[in-house]
Amino acid sequence: MPEREFIGPEAILAKKQRYLIPCAYHFYKDPPQIVRGQGIYLYDSTGKRYMDLYCGVSVHALGHCHPEMTEAICRQVRTLQHTTTIYLTEPIVNLAERLAGVLPGKLCRTFFCCSGSEANEGAALLATLYTGRNEFLAFQNGLHGRTKLGMSLTGLAFWRTDPHPVGGITHVPPPYCRCCPFGRTYGSCRFECVGAVESAILTATSGKPAAMFVEPIQGNGGVMVPPPEYYPKLREVLDKYKMLLIADEVQTGFGRTGRMFAMEHWNVVPDIVTGGKALGGGTPVGFFSTTDQIAASYTRAGASTFGGNPVTAQAGLKFLEILQRESLVARSAATGERLKNRLKELAGMYDIISDVRGLGLMVGVEIIGREPLSAADCTDRILENMKDAGYLLGKTGPGRNVVTWMPPLMIGEEELIEAVEAFEKVLRTIR
Image 1 (cartoon, rainbow, N blue to C red):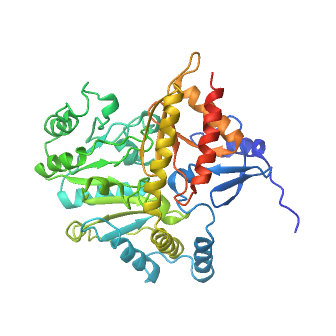
Image 2 (image 1 turned 60 degrees about the vertical axis):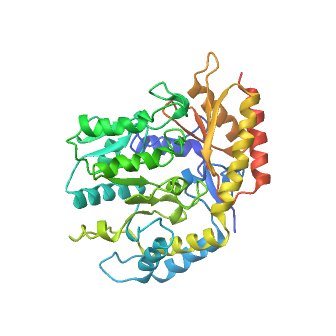
């Protein structure tokens, strides 16, 4: 069979500029055309190989085209692709049952949809139905989706493109000890960041918000990890005002941070968890899960045309099977700690790095500028040079200056060492 001919990056860019809505942006000044994936690697139209250290923004936890995942998806596609939830099929209920076995606390009931954005919309609706309230709190620098409400909940300027956001949403400072907005230092503060939440409830809302949305670790906000006391103290405040805690685990769920769900790091059980990304193994997926008591408030007819479809449900079942069988959650914790420590060594050697932070295989490297380049320009140059060397990384943060590592959970230490060595070589070139 002759090798397929590809139209190439220039032709794709021309069609993109002609036919896609302009908001669809891409990385790199000189972007490749990605045509194939296998394991931790992607390949472009010229045959060049790239180690994928961003895995579709935390989607491909098992790497690309995992043979067992591919077989499970293809077997279901050949059998039954789609019916919607108005007909009975087995995969959706089996996946809900399997999820109930890994969700924290008493969370046991799930609604499936097709994206994290849709999951957060559903969680907001559920919180409103249960509490009878319609106001929300969320973090500054948080990201909760591209929908109308999702953008309004988002507190990150880069993604908050709606010029007329939904009202009734109050943003509070995130717990970021390194650059505390209250000028405090960890260990000698009074957790003014928690006090700011209570102050916002009392002064910027009716005093009765429905819930607070949090990313346990802010992803696009720059991989922000809170101090260990923050979420237990926040839970106390929310309970005081009878508010729900909604944990957006779309990026952080399923082992990414070294726990099945990131909130487990602080032994805090949310009232609602939203998720997606990794669960679908590359197929579109989203979900929100809650307790029996809260779920009982959502009784009027509701559906998602493609949510919980047989193909994605079978992908989710196979994903959870492999995740647990291969002990990838524990592996993420151990491998991620070694990655973070190695990157911290580089921070001690290169003053262009101002901070290294994260949990598990979700690590951010904050970059500072070097005249005449801004921090964002330096970050772009690092990503471009890493791409040219055959390594794909992400960038996050309010200033788009945090190089983000989120490789597949099954990546080997040898591959990570190779990638860090390539990263160091690139750092030397940023003059």
